[in-house]
Length: 79
Image (cartoon, rainbow, N blue to C red; front, top):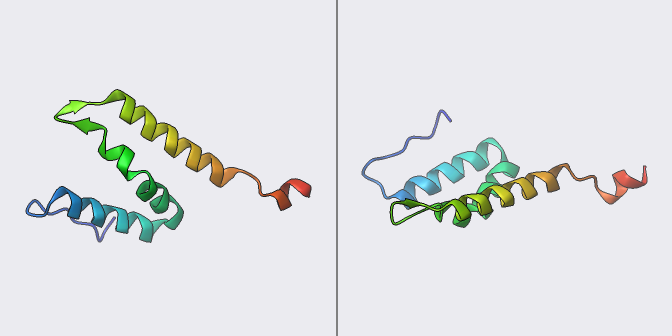
């Protein structure tokens, strides 16, 4: 991530958006997965307490998204 620099003066949301944009530029598919599930990730820490269910939900969503990338298409299944 040579172009990515977090700024202490910027908000979390601004830094988060910069991170997602950088991830999408490095790997569009993975960046899209992170962006699509960023709401689940943001819920992991709520009021300074770790939220285990939110972390589990995020991990489950990411695994499902990654599995769908590896799933053979209907054309590949017919071959």
